[in-house]
Length: 312
Image (cartoon, rainbow, N blue to C red; front, side):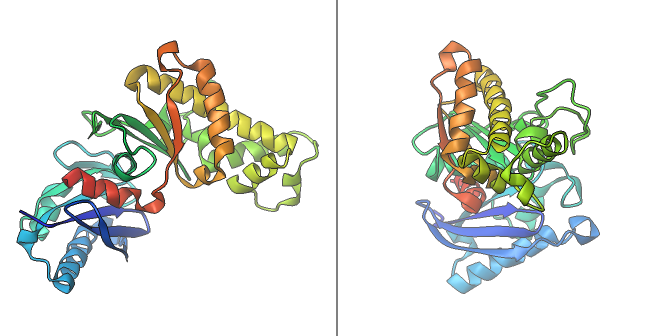
């Protein structure tokens, strides 16, 4: 019986890795650079070498390892086949089989990074104690992970949980990074709220503390809203309206016990939960109206916790 499990979370700049005990205790974590040159050809080799070096350093044998769980930024089928990770330069291939080969046959499970983060938050974070959660990450984009009965919902094409690309406005003229128009990501991401705040500032001469800032960030918008700045409050309210409506639609399909909100924008704290819940209660189907909302607590470690949990 193995004694250890490794969690891996591949980002566009760094790969986060963690070594866990079979009981789920994080023993050590570290990072390596994500080498995206040559179509990301070196990434899995670098991960394998880093894991093997850590095993040697800690005196861990291959027989001691239960497996490796890895999150990647893109759609992943249940068998570990990646369906293009644009940020890494990857096409379509079975990343689980390839990493397992590089590790000498160690079992490998691969999932979408947001799904892995959701699994981690369910296990040891904001969703702890629940088996049915929806995690929404609000960062540069909007990601999502759906866990039902303790299992990740990947979908046939690995696109289960792509909450950021739910269409929220059929009249939107700006184009989302995905090529569509009106995606949730265009309103509820850090990029989205800044885009709309700049538009509001340019379209009027209303007073706002935001006019004193050269380059507005999501944090500054929320900070201004907390002091009662009217224009900033309107931007936060607009974000909450779109996010609350999206959660209401998701609840009709997944009916989770809790929504866990993470990502950089979630650092705004209670003001974000309050405005999202307000609109969720307004739009939700009556049977789902009392669904709980929590902030994520694992931060950047959620992915490696999820990777470990996927193996355990």
